[in-house]
Amino acid sequence: MIQSKQCLLLLSLLHFLSFAVYAQGNIKTLAQTELEFAKAMQTSGIKKGWLKYLDSNAIRFTKANQPENAFKYWQNSERPGTFDWAPELTEVSSSGNFGYTTGPIAYYKSMDISKPAEFYGGYISVWKKNAEGEWKVIFDIGTGYPVKTSIMTHVKELVIINSKTKKRGGINSLLFNDSVFNIRRNKSARFYKKHLGKPFMLFAEGRTKVTDVDSLFMHVGKADRETSVKIYGCQISDSGDLGYVYGTCEYNKKARMYLRIWRRENSKWKLALEYKR
Image 1 (tube, helix red, strand yellow):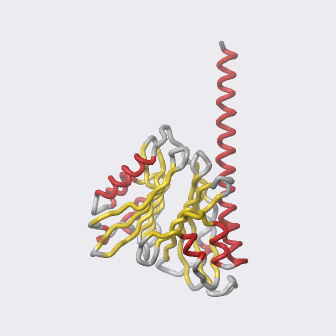
Image 2 (image 1 turned 30 degrees about the vertical axis):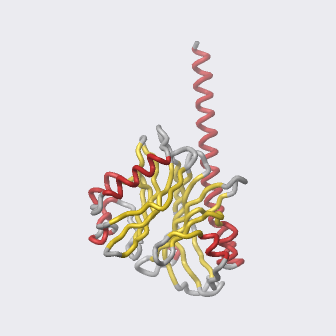
């Protein structure tokens, strides 16, 4: 009996260790893919870089804050210059097929990134593995920082996070959770605290990135009183512990877009990242 328990304990430990190695490998692979994406764009240009790493059904938002197919957009678009960026944070679901990266980004008018950048900001990319096991971008959005800052001052180290959950969530529970979040038209800092995961990142165009509860006032403002909300789409990992929802809300008859990445924590959906513009 004792030997049987010891065998079960050993098998459980081996399973845990193999899972940890698997998850760590997926995170490193995604982070490396992001860096290779940046190098490809700096070598081949913006259009070719996008078309190499975008999923054919990837989503981007227009300047009018309406979603459109990003792959088709870049098939028919040209833009001079290049971008330089690096992942500051990478998170992958326990299934290893779904994740996101975020970090600082800079735009250069020419292909020479040694010259001063024209634009500094941040980016958020949602990734998913395709049928061939390749990481592809399925959603991408960028935001401007209120002040110009060198990209290297933002990237100190790669922060790696593993999703853990006791009870997986489904696509319906993810949508329901986001819908309940949307019902609250005036989202105060107190309201956000109830829904934030550990850790979290909050982005808003023209505002400073928020990563701690004491700075929530920088993300929440009077302009956050929405009159109507429309969800356009969502996806979830195979393991049901990481997913994203995107849509638009109306304020003063103007459409604003939002992206929320939700993480399953203790059998509840918690906000890992939010971007609004």
